[in-house]
Amino acid sequence: MNIVVIPCFDRPEFLHVTLELITKADNYKDYLYLFQCDYGFDLKNLEVIDNFDAIKVINRTKFTGYREGKQSFNVLSGLITAAQHTKELVFLIEDDVFIGKDYFTFHEDLHKKEKDIFCSILAKNHNMSNDYKIISNENYYYINSKNHYQGIGATFNKAIIKKYIQKHFNVEYFKNVSLYCKKNFKGLDSWGMEQDGLIRRILTVSELKTAFAHVPRCYHAGWYSYHRGKKLKMTFDKKVNEIKNIAFNKEKMRQINNYFEHYINDSEPCNLITKHTELKEYTKKLSTI
Image (cartoon, rainbow, N blue to C red; front, side):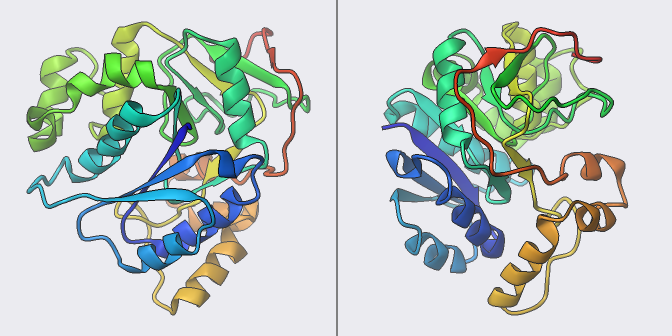
């Protein structure tokens, strides 16, 4: 059975909506869900997880004393653990990533066609300019020739995690993520240093490629976290309703993320009622691939 890793911490209201959408995805019960609860997590998450109708395991991360590397330790722990037990694939779905109907089947089909990729990603490529045209044919994917990685909607073959990522799961990194990246990935210091930045560096030196869906199957809906925005101060049910009121609306998401252009780009709602048949590689040149 393939494994879906879902890190969570202090936003059970987002987790609630994320899991609602997962239950609408094709074949969602075919997977084991590993909930990676970071140290100090909101106990409301356990109630939300308990109501989720699928095979699941909860892993509670213990206190490590890490500061810079706290979140990275939690996320990477989930990936490493899943790689040891999954049938073949490890899906990473953050607690605020909203997925579409054929999310799982698209990933599965893509990995059957492309055996040598670093990972598949079904969110819009936020590393590219926004001027390339998304075509309506939902069967298309493209191979990215640059080191484009984002943790939104990513899925790995277990062999990639074991060969390339696992060796960086070490105390030296988690104690000082910045120093570790500068020391071990010289010349690649312009990106973030937490888990996404680390994985992007690993991807770069591996010289492997990523594969993106041409039509996105998911997006990052969380407009507030410890990196951005202010948390909602209301009852849980009202938080859920407020998320549903805002996070599916492009204009409302643009307004709430208007303080930093990058946040607008990575939080644009997409169609979640997607479908595909036989996948086809899109070979026409995209402007900044």
